[in-house]
Image (tube, rainbow, N blue to C red; front, side):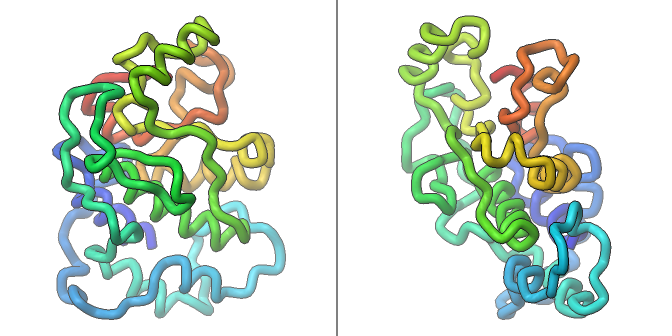
Length: 229
């Protein structure tokens, strides 16, 4: 499945450099399966019997290995079919048109197309591992919302017009995720495969406020040279 995710993110990211292992394999091995009815990562992984809460889905599971190969090669499958990851919403931080953003599985939170597709792929595997979707409290923020946050929480929010939330490249996780050791450990290990990570500045001992709930789509934030909430 790692090969599927890496290939998919390399295609979906809007002209940005790869993050870590992401984008290291863009051979397009899944082209031969275009138009096929390959099973989704969620259906494959959720079909596997899990006796206890796993900490990683990266280790191969013998009982699903054959289908997993099929999934990993189906690089053209979009886990968020209504979203076009190639849309460039432009340079207006916090002023992105709703039509240029993609709504996530919860029907509320929105992100830039490539970030939304990557997050949806991550959510499929998180759901298979944890038995419930990833809970998000905050995603794209308008300029007005960022101004209000900066006013009410000075020192904890980026200057309006510079926030990664304003680019549609960041999410805040629910406390039920952040303070659940199994869930946050799974995300810490698997999130970077999809381009999502809790940035170094937000970790304990980092250069900014400690915010374990704040996660960013790193290929996008690196391309913009930003690293703040």
